[in-house]
Length: 136
Image 1 (cartoon, rainbow, N blue to C red):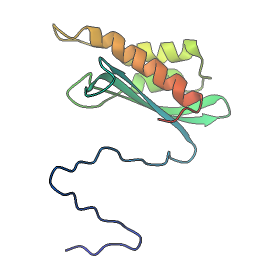
Image 2 (image 1 turned 180 degrees about the vertical axis):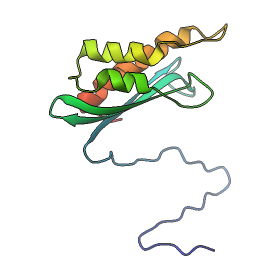
Image 3 (image 1 turned 90 degrees about the vertical axis):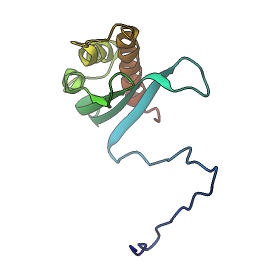
Image 4 (image 1 turned 60 degrees about the horizontal axis):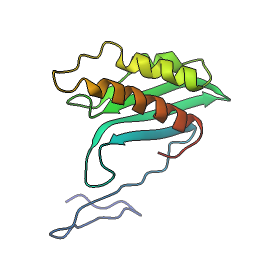
């Protein structure tokens, strides 16, 4: 058995209990947000999601990290989208360009081509949300 560290809490879930939410404070010095696109508001999983972390120098993006979910078998980071933002101020145009870079070269399967547009929208909106200081 591993001893508990000072101030650490342990949770013992009982039958029929589930963890529904974990809240973490945003990392210092980063603007973070995520954006989900769902078919229904409740009791459904997202069709596409994007998570964004921006390291800013004033209004200029120093570096970015962009990850898409529900568009591949695993979370899909987009180095291309991050590079499209680096050294620029976030605007509708730069967010759209980064979103386009995120899906450039996407190879959808026969029945999920619609997800390319959903991913593009999720990335753009997550970037704008993060830049405006919106919480994830």
